[in-house]
Image 1: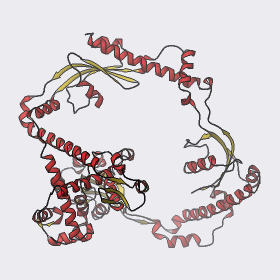
Image 2: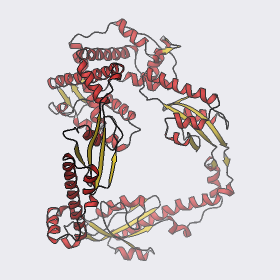
Image 3: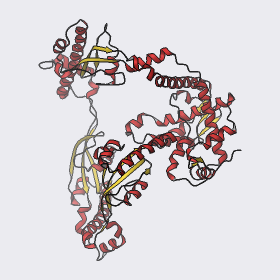
Image 4: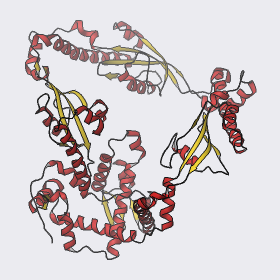
Length: 632
């Protein structure tokens, strides 16, 4: 075997090693065919692919890698990506590709494997392969033996070689290249008008017949949710403060045992410039980022304004503030950044600092020493905290005793009043309400659930909060129902008017399009259609969106024979008219040809690989352990 290496590596390299180690993911295939098989459940596998097993550990590792890759995106967008499915798809595709590579006799000679490992930057020192660095990386970061790593590397190379063989069948003609050049570079100039539904609202009152007709068509839209009105009492720690007496020295003892809690930590104010580096970046990306940060550092060291350099170059959200991060304490930043920042004096600038986000240059602007507060300064605060904790215990005990009495048959209102607490009503609310009159925000959800779960007697359980306890009883319930027209008359009338307005503006837009095709001047047609706004665009290409992607898409369908069209945006309509089509500048074709050919070839290779894998998938036996997947 090749047993190649081992030595100390900086922790910062770990992310790049992991990124290089993980196999390529393919996103082009749907999960439908992966649900075949006899549906066996159980086992620590997520899929069987033509006899090869994909373990739950392997799946979870890949899912975590993908989640980390998209961690900076909004949660809703990440959810829409369906990463669980994508992770499984990728692993299945990897297996199929490797199986086919072996079946077709794709081999990786030992010399080629060794050379590929030796060329990885993660295993090099001073630009040359290091046996010591290799062995250290495998033991500390990969947690793998050289034999296992080399086998994984060989498999990845086999899969890539098969990809290359499939991709080598791709051909791009001169005609395709030129068509792509024209599509990228031709431009249009469009005049457009914006029509708003509000400008086409019907005059006068909504007719009874129209309201009745709309109501009959949309009755379910007006169905109410179940609502309840609840009587409740809120027991708080403050209700018991008069009953609580702290022992002599109790507060001082707490102070002595927790002195570090009463120290205002040191803090600094700093600016930084960040050049981001993806965690799975390859060596070329890493080098480009380092070159960029080194160039910025030279300017900083030459005396250029740090804040201005941050505005122009930083890839952090603080760039607009000149890189200003404000004041921060130890523990609020990632360790590498924090260690570098707190080692600087005000006015000093760091060298290049590497963190999990990328490369930083840091400048400290101010430093405030830690301040230790005396017992006298914090005494009232400690006593208040002690009383609150003890008061919360009193509130819990009292709430549980009252609840027990009521459960045994005592009237809810009598029990609460005799105990000296006030009763309040919430007013009607539904399950969907996230605000309930009188209920603290942090207890609304639990209160809502407890109230709607109450039995026939209306008594709910005790609702516990960080600042008190709630006792509750449902007074009245309103079941879901469809209100009569008179109860929702205002809503119906508005809905009818909105519907008519949308129909009116659509018709106005259609008529304007037709008028423009019949050579009516644009301004005249727009005025007749009650346009709210008119504009003429600058020349733009298919990759630019003066208004929206749909606007660009429609604009490039316009021709001299069909010069006008509209975009339906519901309450708004855009009417477009082609003013000019500017052909691509053929003088730049020769210069752009190579890049276009490369782009088209890459896209065609991906399509070929996708189609090839689709055929393989259809013929392969793929079984998914859906029960386990649902629990991960």
